[in-house]
Image: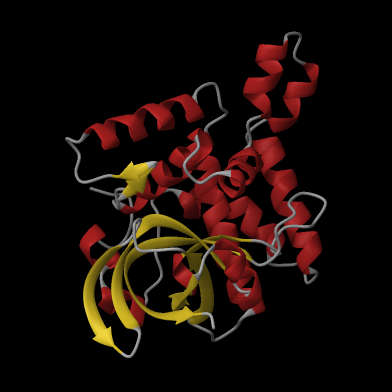
Length: 259
């Protein structure tokens, strides 16, 4: 089950990654219409990023935390989409990471295959632990899943504006081994078909990818599978240019090794 225009098996398939289609999530077109009407008349990318954040601030009352009387109240309202992005960059297996993986599962129907450990199926202890982390991370937040809906829609809008006519982007992921990724097929020539986790960290900087492992996975990622990418929001809001959060499934990758 999902809330998307395509079924989960199609989104996860290698065929989709070769021939991507737009992923329409229920409710975004209606809920985001006022935002995208404003974005459509703004030519400056940085101004569009500020417009997006201001819209989120008002729509989800994120600014109210400053007026709350108790630290607990302030903390709960301050938990905006930015907190979860920053939490992911610090540790993708954190509570914040579980919430982002939960968004992919809820909206696209792709369950995580790794969270702290391999998640074999819905009945495993690992899946239970993931759901606990997800609930802890989402507690006392201001409608975090609808916030993430609009974040994904904004990212897709920005990618279309900045890369007109482009369908894929070459991205890199540093790894030490395939512990988090299932090898579906060996394609030869250092190429593999991997089943990636439902959400994964990549970068557009080949050299930076080596900081995270002894091997680098190179993949042509559909723009429609980029949940978030650094550089689309002003640096005053989010530092992490070049970082990309990629929705998973079966990806053909080339494994690059040093030396």
